[in-house]
View 1 (cartoon, rainbow, N blue to C red):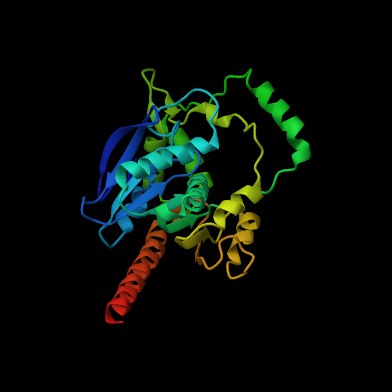
View 2: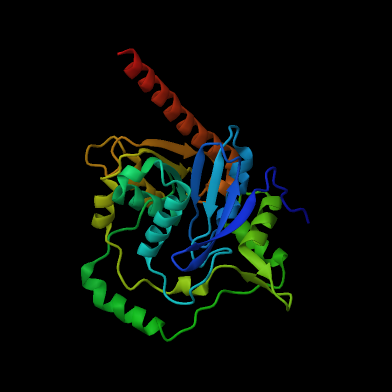
Length: 308
């Protein structure tokens, strides 16, 4: 067994965010440009490690574990999506109160980032959305059944499967990300889970995340937020994503009716939904090309204003 050894191990810290202990992983020097990374459902901020190690320029990367995921505090009850927005708002005010921030989000984290960038457009100047496509619109007529299902699920105590060893968990990670290296899957297994006093391997995620949402997804509301985004935006998706239909809705960004009008797009070859696992070097290249091109454009615009 070989476990991936990080180039830059980074540092962990904990913050009290709205009454919950939040785990924050930080890489890079204090004086480097700051990037915030927001992970997807059941993932952790720390598994962005492979991309961090592939970046060529100096950045200060702040990756959070959402409430109830990774090493952040669990609430052992229902999770409500707006809480992620409020948590992010407080984290940004702690780390970046004096200037607009750059957000990089994957999947659920990309949806949170995109909503926030439209809700508070003045707070975000660059947005990188990795496979954050939103959901299909819900049928309002299904609301009674959805609420009933939610009520019935309140009587249950959800659980995640426990594993006999990390070696039992690793194949499940590789099944989802077949192009991932074994040593990286071993690393992820140890970030996603821990060994308890009985020797069992338990996921760090709060099983209450498995409960259904009482409120159905309203895509028009999400698009109304997206349309307010002022940040320079990049969409990234994997060539082999298992969400092809959903991503197709967001690829034609040159349409005047597109909610992310004028965003840049990037397809990462030979990668699925978990691009940061399967193609971290290509993902790092796409991220840095976008950020550095924006920097050059900013310098050019600034020089032009000085001359004129």
